[in-house]
Image (cartoon, rainbow, N blue to C red; front, side):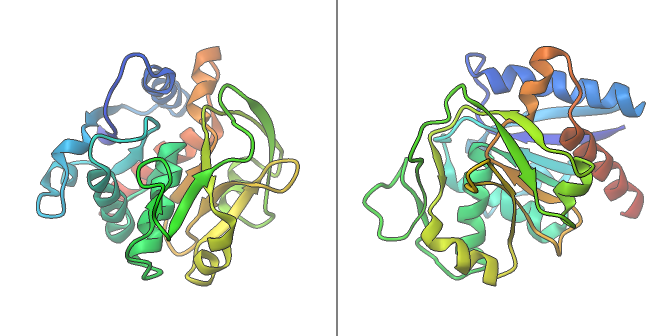
Length: 235
């Protein structure tokens, strides 16, 4: 059995929080694997205490921002990136992974999120031009990318509950430091990224967990679970 950390502040009123366990269960059954998961509140995580994450073979930073402790979410993302644990960030997890990467890889030490610090001069995450709350849209993936392989070259039809995304002014700086933007909507706006030098480090603005609301398994969540198994096998 292996364990996945669900980093976020559990709230029964957040649809994604109800869907994620079901999505993981569907992946477990589809892959015939015995998995377990636990919620890890952001308030329990800080740079001086990462022991609460060491027992997990993979980390999913879930929707639900603003988090009670933004620094806790960023620490969890950095821990997954630096220890090469499989990482999935959806919606708020996508946004905060961009901030963590900007701060700790690109050297933008004051990189911020407009939701929590709108007056910052270094806003990596800003309001979307059009809200994606309860919207569904088509996603295409860059040929040769991990996501393109996961989706078998096909388009995705994905659901959202989101008002914030990447500030396009920072796209080139992030890419120059190694991040790849590989998922796009039908007008070319960024909807997913991955880190090619990491075994599995993927963020999506869409919420693949919503597939579980319709009792459907999702290829990205299956790939995440499979990556966690490989992480154990290689440990």
